[in-house]
Image (cartoon, rainbow, N blue to C red; front, side, top):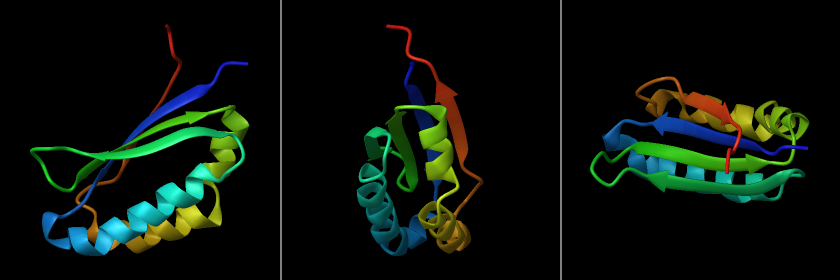
Length: 97
């Protein structure tokens, strides 16, 4: 079965980074413990503070769907919404090499 690779952007207002960073770090730590999570990384753009990307690998679409519909992710997204500059964009990909 092919793994699902996900790239998502999370863009936050720069003046709210101190409030958002603990939420993001908890999301990463919790997600890494989920069934089917092969890897989950969070990176921030060097030049544009407040622009984050998740780089994820999931065992299956079912595992990813379970993650996306989990109470933890729903709660985090709702809590982070006032600090967001835009809706997150997410891309589900297949690795070619």
